[in-house]
Image (cartoon, rainbow, N blue to C red; front, side):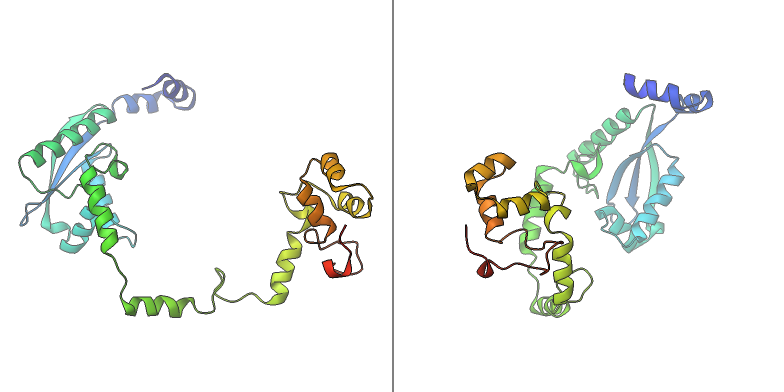
Length: 244
């Protein structure tokens, strides 16, 4: 363990917890289908029975499943045999053992459920697996029936609520994020009113407030900062105000 982790353990864990951590065991295991003889290699820091129950739970979950979990869900847990290969004293040794057994069995021509080289799970797929994933994605062309279903489900939907926003809702959303209410705003309404009433040039005002000339021009032409909370009219239109 690194020094930082050791320091954290000594400051946050009791003596009994530290003792159990030192005696923690890691295992490399193999799961084989009884008929197809396809195997899965894995490692765990939990007891094998706990890890096996976790695999069964993941196989039944309604989430994106790994290849092994899909097979486990399809054939059932009774169609597989479970055996421990090696016992280790650290996670790094268990990962190295997993990598070794995957490579060794593949060299013998064995078919595995594993889709990576092992060690760190799904974050290190091999080049062959990446190429297969790319080709598989290119082959996935939705049918006309699927496209029609997607189109029908999206008709009239413009937001996550599944309904169109009314004009009043869009106007309220625009007002709520306008002007100095925005966290990205560099100016305040007091400064904007001064810019519109000032006789200074755009260049001078831009240098004064550390903004661009185009920003000053847009403010003066009422293209931006339209909703003045102290104005009698809610909006100003550029056609009602001469360009500066």
